[in-house]
Amino acid sequence: PGHAALLGTFGYADVPVYRRPRVAIFATGSELMPVEAPAAPGRIRDSNSAMVAWMAEQSGAVPWLCGTLPDDRAAVEEALHRAAEEADLIITTGGVSVGDYDVMACLLRELGAAGTHVYGAGADEVRESGLLFNKVAMRPGSPTSAAIYEGKLLLCLSGNPGACFVGFELFAHPALLAMQGCTSPLPRKITAKLALSVSKGSPHIRFVRSRLRYGDDGIIYADPLAFSKSSMMASIADAEGLVIIPAGPQGLEAGEWAQVMLLPT
Image (cartoon, rainbow, N blue to C red; front, side, top):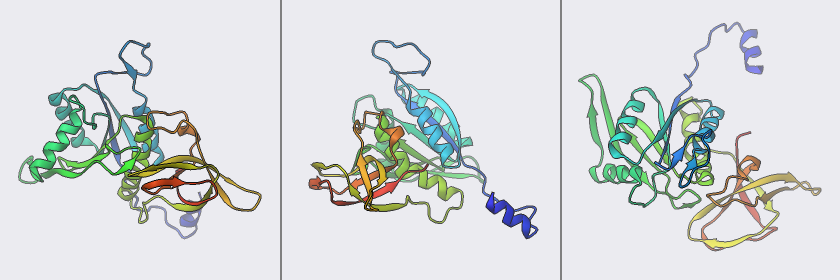
């Protein structure tokens, strides 16, 4: 509102703006079923798609829910091709681990082996495909990967809800802000004092969901939330920041200072 008032004051009736990017969202896995479906043996509801859609909208984008993909390579490639025709960013969840049926992992490995190649649709349209990175040394969300697929950015997030959430905040959110002209798209960080210990060491950097609060001493405290494993989603709604625990044989103890990545509100 303040920007609109300022522009109006100086006579700017029309101003150039960035188009909101369109995000195609897929969930992969034959075990997935719609949220409204009754429980069934061997099946799980697709909770990631709704979460990613809300996060995309929170990032200024227009979400495009494309449904669930089966563990079938041909079906996945056809769906990605259609999405690349209309979307600015493609996000998939699941299918990026090391299982025999993780089709996105197989696709990414082949893109990496082939290197960058050109997908052509005529002399006036040249689209490149190639792997950007395959997996990240972090917890949660180590399967997170990225590629250029037929000229569009493809982000492959973990199927575990907590890991999917972290992967979106670290990679998709900044990418969407950059697409909309933001010159500082990376997440803002603050320094806070840990209210509880995160003692366990890890060979990878960790991002721990936490609440933030001001203490009576004027210091900001980061309070790590329970139920924060990658497969757990109960604490996602309460998270206000991600405490960054460096890789190493030990974590951080209560009372130590830590970097905290702030989450959008």
